Image 1 (cartoon, one colour):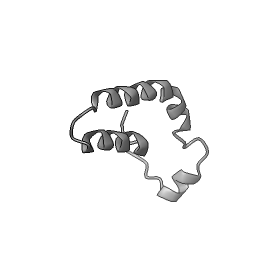
Image 2 (cartoon, helix red, strand yellow):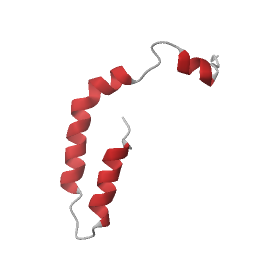
Image 3 (cartoon, one colour):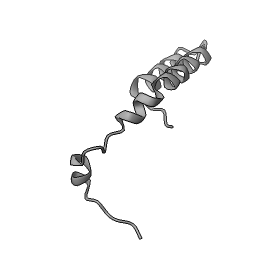
Image 4 (tube, one colour):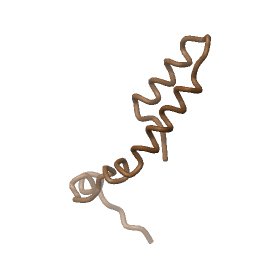
Length: 62
């Protein structure tokens, strides 16, 4: 059986941050970003632009 925690309570709770996970994965994510950019070359100008927006928005998932 699960426990439901109200959203606001979860935000206030100490240690509820993903910062440690982001810190642990930063180097790997930087390599993923570089790979995306290296493979996103195209004669279609929108393709590299979409790749850049994906990277800038943090739209990748673990």
